[in-house]
Image (cartoon, rainbow, N blue to C red):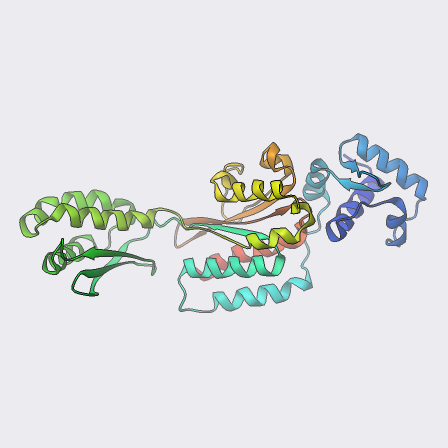
Length: 337
């Protein structure tokens, strides 16, 4: 553990660097902190010791220092204040308006929340989930679109929707109507995770009453399986160029590759409800040394689980982002029990 003086100096350097992006020297520490009661020489000596411990790095062509990944980690684990930040109230108000819109289902709420989060933090946000396996099928509707096509709409008990277009020149409208009546009679109330199994059990009935039943079955199964694939959307990629850390085109390519893959979630331990995790620099892989990611999980509707993450440079405002993600998590649980 660090001494109180070392902790105080490290905390100041991390927080000043987060705000300015500039290396922090002893003069900056003294000029901006009335609580510091030791000399510039003492600060420099302590910075040397913090650098030896791997918590600070010497900036090139500067007498100042910047936090290392280890330094950020020590700050997050030991020095970060978890108080409320008044400047987040505008962000909370905008997101609260989304939650108060009762016409939106959870997927729309998550997308709008993620978009607002990116816009107001200038960072990338990723939302994954919820997984709908525990949701149940509420109804299937058939809407003729033209002489050639008809649209089927599958709706779950919590308002999620999947559409499937059928060519009724290949599969008649009458056959589709019969199949939907059978599905609505036999599948309503079935968990999404059990749909494929139950549809297979209905094959003999469908084969007796519907021509080209295999085509209809496959179309519906593929549509309903989509409910089981967690939603994953990304917002705010355009904002990463506003961070000086990502002025290098190769670093831009690295972060795009990171967020487009499944890799963002593989670095985190299994999350429990309300649990938030932070990964910094090399903790996301050696090639992602300039990045950090904060993620929280949520469980709603008696078990549906998803995650919201913020991705950006290591120079994240960890205190504020931790507060807002915890607040979003609690608000989700409150509004979608």
